[in-house]
Image (tube, rainbow, N blue to C red; front, side, top):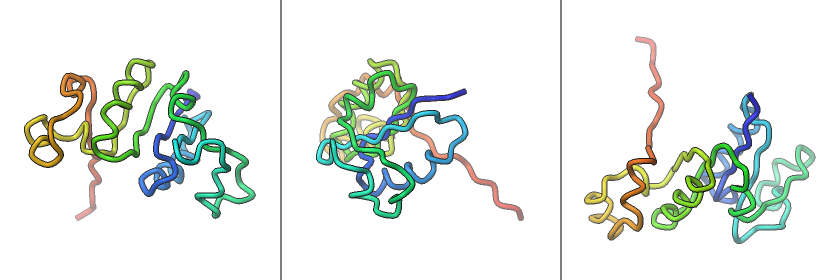
Length: 135
């Protein structure tokens, strides 16, 4: 299997962790790095440790989502919900690192205000993998 994956918010802290993991993932065939503020710039401007390893450039979120199989959203709380909807409508599976898909609408509202797309919560899931530690 060779998936096309998009990382929205690839120029931020959460994006850096995703880049490190997804560049080595055996099922990722193409990895797209999205950032509105860095679109067109080399990935190495934000992540100099990748110099000599890639000539990739940041693209816009819309470009990254075009034909993507999976979208990883490492974008700020509150700004992510519209991108969840856009990615779902584009046919991508969505993995959201923000609170926008993690919290129920009431809890979200208590912390951030009304959820912009509460109807999408049924189609978006948040989860952490469980790590077993030997006893």
